[in-house]
Image 1 (spheres, rainbow, N blue to C red):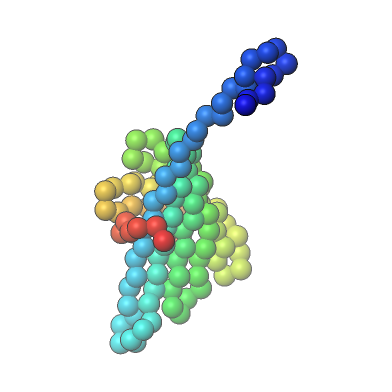
Image 2 (image 1 turned 90 degrees about the vertical axis):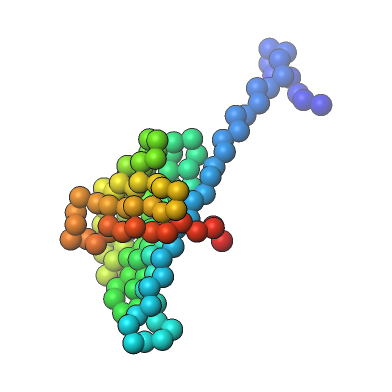
Length: 125
């Protein structure tokens, strides 16, 4: 039985916000080194048009870059920011992510950061 509020009406139901998860993953073998791999992983959770997630670059021999994505979805394009840690330093970059059926295209106006990539869509684990 629902309790009534102070004016005698049943409480308003909380709106249900559906969150969808999208996952993307690239794995590249290191030349002439069996079992060694460089990995790119992107996970996005979208509620209405609000996007949160993470984007990690995990190379075998270089400093890794791990960080979070925050943005807004407009049609199939996410604009937002990427807050990441690399070589012990925290940095932020603007990003644009284009969502396609089988991939995500991520880019930043700061090309020297090496954020730009095409990442293959996969099932979320």
